[in-house]
Length: 439
Ligand code: GUN
Ligand code: ZN
Image (tube, rainbow, N blue to C red):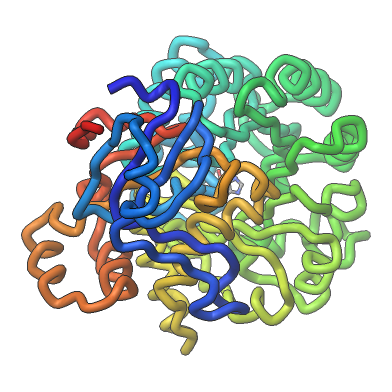
């Protein structure tokens, strides 16, 4: 079917128009038999099929029986760590030295980078993720290859070259000057090209000198609409090490504040072990956290306090953190997010989980003008979920009486098998996708 012009997508639609924590059931819009008119990749209108379809003679992508939600937004992931996933037995600092740095050292090679970027992006699509904030390696070639592969697929992706000039093997180190120049070249070449954006990406405080963090701050001052992407307070030994390396800083976040890295469009992955001052500073600066539940469990880092984020009014998105995280699936991340808060006596509602994986992620990335829900004018990135994808899902579906149950089952029991199709700018992009079509 030709999806380049105007077409209709039909199915059950579910999306957040606000944050359910603050707006309750008004935050969610559910249309059991809905139709969405899409023109050149943008949403023109969403309404009941009985209203939208009779007015239209456009072709219809028919997903009746399926649940269509906005494309998932992964706010923290490392593409050169595909082959690090499921590495046994270490916590953060040893995990980096044993598995991660040796693996990332291979990404100076453009062929390795291109092959992995293509695999990685196909996996994101297979799992329903249409936007991600992505770490490259410290090699410029890694990010060149990544953006080229993302451009081919028309995905909205934000990525950056890692900046790291100390405390790691030579093969993954740069210098303050070279990291500044390489990042600048990449920004000039890729930032704002189609759906692509750049993130200035110092790895974390222990692997950057003050001189390099200042170079990152200089880039943000020169290019105010790029993102800042780094790690913060993930692991207790890491936090102790930061104290030793930066004795003049009040706390971990202050290390970044001193180089002017904390502002809107700054995303701090993990943020588990924060002081009250750090929470308040994140809030005051309008910075965001990427909560990486699966990775935090896998490498044993700790339990993120979501209730505190809500209380302090800090914006949160979700991240897989592949390869610390052991799955590409944002459904699987929602599952672990739910359980980590259960352990702390907070029950995150199904609507809030959907929000965190979609509109909340868009807010964390300051991209709500483009993505995150089905408001008219936004880009038509969608995930078509299938409650019949496995025998267990199908069995459970028999018990559903409300969309909350239907959604919660998918979030807890679903994986990529439940992603029937992924639509990028309104076009089916998952290879198995097979909507019936017709006027
Ligand atoms: N902190 C610094 N680098 C990394 C990384 O690659 N993964 C995770 N999870 N934490 C980090
Ligand atoms: Zn990470």
